[in-house]
Length: 53
Image (cartoon, rainbow, N blue to C red; front, side, top):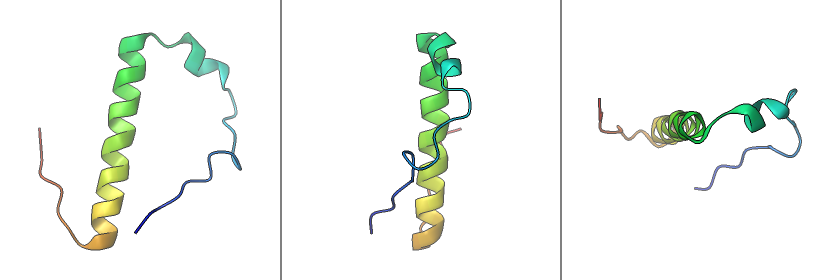
């Protein structure tokens, strides 16, 4: 099952914030977002995501 997120329908309120983040900060944001997406997908399919912490 493919989940879609309406990124184009809900533009960020302050897109310039992303431009002010450094590469390390962007990597952290993307990592956390990926974790949230994986947990959401796992919860919808009834699977458990292994903990890496």
